[in-house]
Amino acid sequence: MGDSQRVVRILGAGLAGSEAALQLADRGIRVELVEMRPEVGTAVHKTGNAAELVCSNSLKSTNPDSAAGMLKAELSALGSHLIDAAMRNRVAAGGALAVDRDAFSSEVTARLCAHPCIEISRRLARSLDEEAVGVDALIVATGPLTEGDLAQSLCEATGADNLAFFDAAAPVVMAESLDREKLFSQSRYEEGAGDYLNAPFSKEEYEAFAQELVGAERVIKREFESKDLFQACQPIEEIARTGIDAPRFGALKPVGLTDPRTGRRPWAALQLRAEDAHGESYNLVGFQTNLTFPEQRRVFRMIPGLESAEFARYGVMHRNTFINAPSLLDSNLRFRPEIEARWGVPVYVAGQLAGTEGYCEAIRSGLHASLAVVAELSGEKPLPLSEDTAFGALMGYATNPQTTGYQPMHVNFGIMRPLDERIRNKRERYAAYARRGSEALADYCGQLRQRGLLPSEEGGER
Image 1 (tube, rainbow, N blue to C red):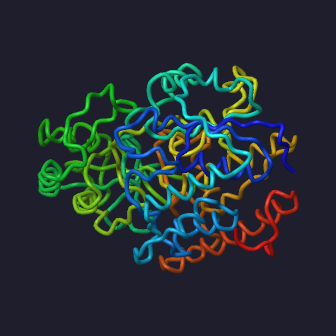
Image 2 (spheres, rainbow, N blue to C red):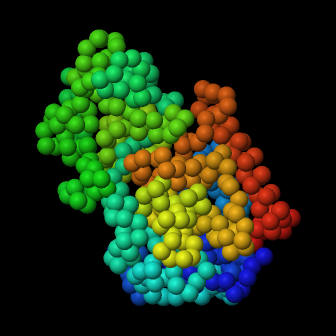
């Protein structure tokens, strides 16, 4: 299956890079894993270990009927080294998978160092043009702190507009949690139903909302210049600070809208745009925010029709380098041919640099890219991953050229294909998503086994 003469270079020994390295090495492919730490440190890392967790030590829910639980089931079924290491270094956290971060990263580092097909190179990568020389494939997994010469190299290769340095994303809410009695469908200046849902405010509702908005707790307590932000997105609460009516002339402007219940234009109105092609989730248009998650729940549920809103994704704003994946990558996380032509070898992007948000999503992206590399080096086409799986749904969203205003995303039911039959009960609906995903995963794993890319089920644990 493998070819020890083939060499793949991986930039970054984070979650994605470490998983990719171990998967390729297990298949007999030589790997050069380039990691700048500890020679070059960062503001958040403390060690030179691989897969060091720098934020929470939680890998989210293990509930098999949750999107996060579905993703963990995928990782386990596909023989993920890092999910295995996480389970071995688990600490009590209720229904979540949390780890002893030092023990976890130490075990991953030990696995990398012990593998005969992996060479760890402690140096700083500066140029994609240079790193693509002398190898059969390149995986870029340098993470959300990618900066300096390497970031500039990415800009040169993809176009400056395709690289963002601050992640300013609006919240996304589940369609089923919206109160349709209070919302109406209409596009601006159009009669009848339109492409947007609209949440109309009365004067009193708006002023109460604006007051809570400007006083809410923020994550990052400093002002951001527009040049720092992707597409110059300003947080809605910062706009409100310039004047209580400022949002009414921006994201909450009611012009061109008529509330069918009153026959008049509302005092203010939030527009909600479908986040996915199936209308399972909605984006709060213009609501990029720096509020803490609890404050988003509290304040944004003051919006008429969103009193019981279930958040598929909270708004975020933090230092986070990522590429505009829908315009640059295919479903295997490989650069599109017009970009890749300059290097002459296949180049992939994995982890948060590709815009996949979350620890397990990063691990899974490394595994996904590694399987694509194995197929490429074997002269075969990568197996398509069903969008009924958790990660397949994420790839369907993240690499679809029709996805606009791309922002980092984690797995969630809001981006999954609707069920064939509408299920009103949330618990039953999520269980149905999980069953459907499990069937698609079983079929995918069966095809991998037929190709010799996955051990038989009788092979036992690592």
